[in-house]
Image (cartoon, rainbow, N blue to C red):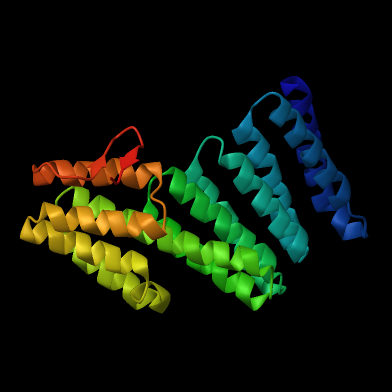
Length: 263
C-alpha cells in the first residue's frame, strides 16, 4: 500500500513538471495530477500514513486554489484537516479554518457551521473549554445565517453555554476566584444569552459560597441546579473537588465516581 502510494505520488509530481511546460501549448494535466494525488492519499490512509495522506490532499487543495475551484478547494482543506486530526489536532484546526474561509466566500454557510462545530469538538478533546465554547458560538452563527436545522443551531448554543460553565468550574477548582469572575464576565459580554442563563447564576452562586465558606449554601446551589438540569459526571467530579476544599461535611454527597446523593 505504501509503495503504491509513493509511486502514485511520484507520478503526480512528474505530471506536474510536464504540466508546467505543456501549459505553454494549451494542454492541461491538472485532472490527472489530482486523481493521482487522491489515489496516493487513499493508499497512504490504508497504510495509516496519515501525514503523507494529508500532504497529498493539501497539494490538491493548492491546485484547486490555483484554478479558482473554491468549492473543491474547501473540500480538500476539510479532508486534510480530518486526516490531520489523527496525529496533530492543532494543525488540523488550521486546515479546517481554511475550509471555513473558502466555504464562506461561496455562501456555503451550513458547511461553515459544520466546520466550526468540528473545531469546537477538537478543543473539547483538548480540554480547552474556552475555545470550544467560542467555536460553538461561531457554528451557531453560521447555522443561523443559513437557516439550517434549528436543532443543530440550538445544540451549538447550548454547547457553548456548557463549555462556559466547564471553564468557570475549572477556574474555581484551582482556586483562581479572581480570574473565574473575570472569565464569567467576559463570557457574559460575548454572549448575552449566557449573561441571563441559569449556568451563569450557578457559577456566581458557587463563587459566593466559596467566598463565604458556606457549605450549606454550596449544597443548596448544587441540589437546586441538579433538580432542573441533571449534572453530568464531569461536573460532579469537579464539584466534589470544590466541596472537598471547603472541608466541611454536609447532607449532599457528591462522589468522584459520578454518583450524586441529593437526599
